[in-house]
Amino acid sequence: MQTFTDLPLTETLQRNLAAAQHETPTEIQALSLPAALTGGDLIACAQTGGGKTAVYALTILNNLSQAEGAGHSHPRALILVPTRELAVQVENNFALYGKGTGLRGVAIYGGAGMGQQIMRLRRGVDVIIATPGRLFDHMEQGNVDLSKVSILVLDEADRLLDMGFMPQVKRIVATIPDEGRQTMLFSATMDGDVEKLARAYLTDPEIVNAQPRSTAVPQIEQVVHRVTQGEKGDLLMTLLGEAREVDGGALVFTRTRHGADRLDQILAEAGLRSGCIHGDISQNQRERVLARFRAKRIDVLVATDVAARGIDVPHITHVINYDVPVCAEDYIHRIGRTGRAGRTGKAFTFVTHGDTAQLRAIEKLVGQRLDPNPPSADENRRPGGGGRGRYSGGGGGGNFRGGYGGNRSGGSGYGGGGGFDRGGSRRPR
Image 1 (cartoon, rainbow, N blue to C red):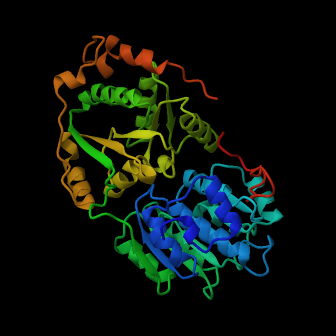
Image 2 (image 1 turned 180 degrees about the vertical axis):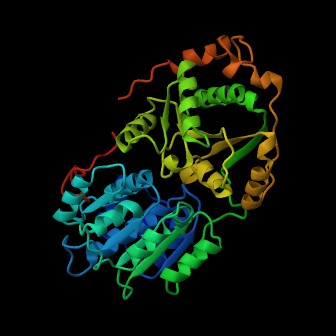
Image 3 (image 1 turned 120 degrees about the vertical axis):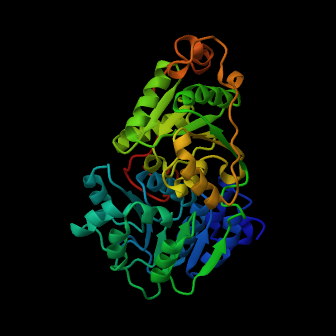
């Protein structure tokens, strides 16, 4: 397949793809869509940012819109995702591709009120996009019936496992009929646990591997900096300045929620337009911060691993691992926030003496040596003077104050005729 027009998609979907200016499929789309559209089971191993969501979104929309007995009385497709951010992103993709299909969908996740979700479910939906915990809560209360589901998607299966969702996943899938069900599993890594999960739920699947020889995405330049804890601040400010010069966004990862809050506060005090998301921040607040980041009203987003799952912001040029992730797989998911859909990006990792073991685990996973690139004193010293105290002390951040402006202010249905309808759900604006 060379273009999407080569696929047996409905005219409505072809129109929506053209309107979105999606003409040439990514590697994972070209390899997976022909098999998925036939209705068979699928295992797809691909990095985040490769366009995997479109594989199952187009498959579900195409097949459900042509199925006999179409209606909204029972959900007919279920997508399980590990985080609320990913649920929102997937819902937005369905909105983009599903205009005019008459299909209804809803995103179900924690951190949002159950009342509105119950109301949406009672109205009737065709597609449910859900985190396992919140969906299981609805099932226990009798709010959802999955007995008519014919398409099941396990997205980011490796993260579903890592985050401990398997007890809920097993109980959810047990309520879905096996006969005639299409199951698609997507994962950035394919270890023994993911393979065991696939064997449990898939039958004679088509296996697609869109991974390069190195696990990490080739269009991402990966740089390791050997630093002391006290040197991280100077280097961070230098890299944020580089991102600003190319009009790019920077995503900075910390290991803890407290660390994310503290770093966000320090960046704000230095005059940078920054925002922060982590598990202790409400869903509405997280959506507001992400909306400002997408609109370029903030330039730096500080995040923890779980909170950043599902972030899809095209202008992210720099991912900065301020803290090395404890789990090597998290490194893959972190750097996958840049270099998405064929774009280029840069990923920087700050490695202290105590991080050597984690670095070796990451190198083993990505299949390449990440050569340290220690910053020189000149690289760390920014114009504007200032000492080497906390983040270059007083005047060290002067040039960034000017560049970033120092302003932290922030700022139903899918339009037209009957698109993929999620009713009154909140959407990042």
